[in-house]
Length: 159
Image 1 (cartoon, one colour):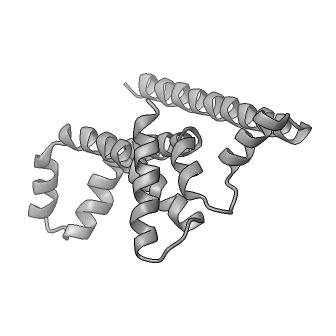
Image 2 (cartoon, one colour):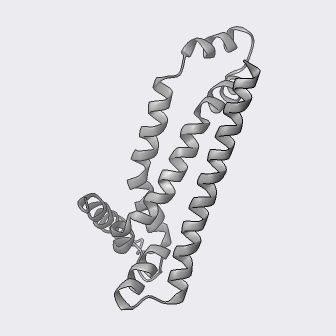
């Protein structure tokens, strides 16, 4: 489980060092993006495979431009996958400590800071941050569930 993050971190660092770029936030973002892009593409591709291409052709036959078809048909269809992929990418960036550790250089990311505090002794700031992350997660989950139930109730009433 640790191997992909370690390999991506080391290979990113070695490659960019040969081009004269030292470790830092740029390499951290690049390394994280390299690792996380696969998850995002998997989610968006899975959603695209279920897309009914006749809707696309119908919009184009009715005179819509490629941009209008994308904006009014394809993008709304992909929104759930895009939102889910964004959340997964955000959570993966927290979890992918190994890549961050190798490429961060002298800068400190939140993940590296928390890991160093776990080793040296937790401070109240780390505990408060953990509480804030838990609260934000619970609030977003409750808000999503309330929205989902309201939409389901509206759908039942409309039928």
